[in-house]
Every structure is written in structure tokens, then in C-alpha cells.
Image 1 (tube, one colour):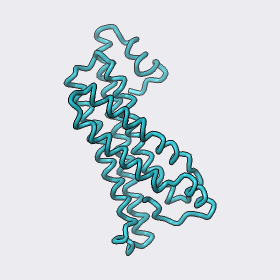
Image 2 (cartoon, rainbow, N blue to C red):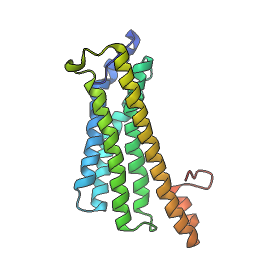
Image 3 (cartoon, rainbow, N blue to C red):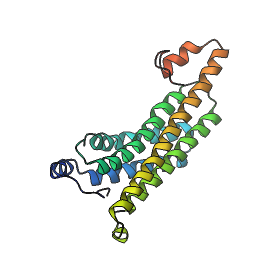
Image 4 (cartoon, rainbow, N blue to C red):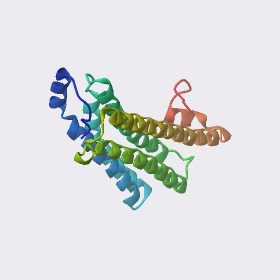
Length: 201
């Protein structure tokens, strides 16, 4: 799917072994399924259980694609773009899973937080679809510079969403921390989200 630039012969062998075309398509499918699941489950708990299931099923694709490390520069940029969408999925699943067990959030707030994650993931997934299109027959007229420009732009936009998801996560955790501080219960929040040395909100 995303083989849009030439790959060195040694890299080709690696790609044959790991089948990155199918891995990239599987990552797109997995992210889309997470978004769909996030909006169709009957309640937040059932919703998140299904999201976790989809994420676990798709995680092997991210891990395999991450293991490909001998690509030329521009193909590497495509790989990193795809992996950032995987990282967004991971931030959603891991952090929201902790928030589900955090009494500082109401059920209505958790619903809103989950919706925010799914929207950000959806926007990132849409950008991956754009990468797919540049290798379609209809776009073969693109020259190398045009392809590289598209890769660069999509990479930057996905990177912006990745940073936004980090910020979104940190702000939500900071809300819990502030509420816990008012209740003199910060130790529990630090244990849930990380120690004082590890905290990042």
C-alpha cells in the first residue's frame, strides 16, 4: 500500500519477509475499527472493552512494522507516519483504561474523553488514507518531488495530531491530579498514572 518510493535491494528483502504493504493496510483497518467501535458500543465500559480487544488484535501489526529498520529516508518517513497512528491508538487505550478506574472522572466525562480520543484517531486515520492514494494508478502521474511533498505534509499533520493526543492525555490527567490534591489523595493518582519522577502532566 505504502510502497511509494524506491527501496534498496537489501531493504526489499526485509519488506518481503515482513510484508509491510499488508501490515500498513492492517494498521489502517485496525485504527478505523477502533474509531467505529468507539461510537457504536452501548456504554463507556462495554465500548472500551471492545476498543481494547480491537487494539490488542492490531498491535502485532504495529510491532512488526516497527521492526523494519533498513528503509531509505522517504520510505522510512512513511513508516514513521503509520506508526504514529499506532502510537495514538496506544495512548488512547492505555491511558483511557487508567481513567476508567479513576474516581475523579464522572461517567459523562469519561464518555466525552473517549469521544475526543476517537475523533483525534479518526483524523489521523484519514491522513493515512491520503498516503494510500498517492500510489494508486490515478496518481502515477505524480513526480518524485510531488510524492515526497505529500509524504512530508502528511507526516507533519499526523505528528501534530500525535502531539495533540499527548497534550489531551496530559490535560485530562492533570484534571484528576488537581481534584485529588483538593481531596488530599494525590498518592493514589500518582500510583495510577506514574510516580512523581514519571509524571508528565
